[in-house]
Figure 1: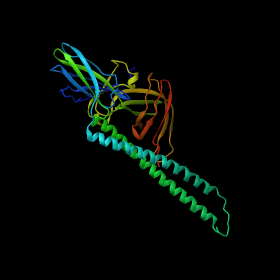
Figure 2: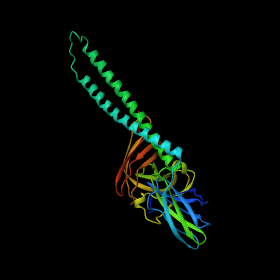
Figure 3: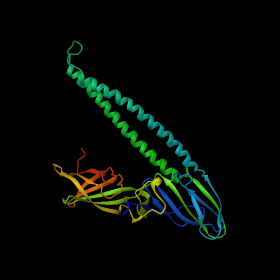
Figure 4: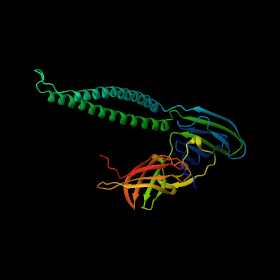
Length: 327
């Protein structure tokens, strides 16, 4: 059976020497970068991103001669990027503190709302309308909870934006990166490879039902945003699980198919809803692990909406729900 996936992408590796385009193999949690760079004067520098896995660099001569010396040293980050990174780090800490404070407020007002709703109405001289007093107290606590939830959402969205910018700075500004300095004897250049972590590909599944107790599953490669127009190849393994020279499936562009399976449906139940929908369970008879990812479902050719597939082990039965309405 075809192995589920290896994504090889093509991008330029910047270098003081003009290097040829590098091949990049995308795993689920990282990449393997391979390329050849000329060294006409017997010297070459290759930059590594901040996600470089220390100790993974390999280099050999591409022509006559030999590699005489290799030094891998940290790069000096761009001053503006370094300043922005420090500001973002402080901003992230402030947002984390904000979330902790909001968690405390949430517990306080949840307890207050529960306390108000559990009070027994008791009419007194100072409280002639006990039900109205309880209602006002409950409404106040609930309003405060709504404000807490809005604050948490804003803080969580802020954290995501900060993290995204910090990741971008690590790549753009050389923060956390390093550079390999390579000396060679003889003519030619160097053939090199190294591993990175953190930027991988994600499976996207098309589930197509036709009422025949089978589901056709097409696995597509969802590529990182900046690489969606590039050629690639892919494998459904983490970097640590991969072996050299593993089988690769070539793809071109975003969401290109990499594997197709027809799998048995154990249960299929339609929704009794205005727009319809379906819940079905299928058995993974591929002999391979199907990793988690997003996807879409079709029933007799009709699109039922997006789905979330939680992944499955060989032989496991997994349920998928399509067409549910989010209120």
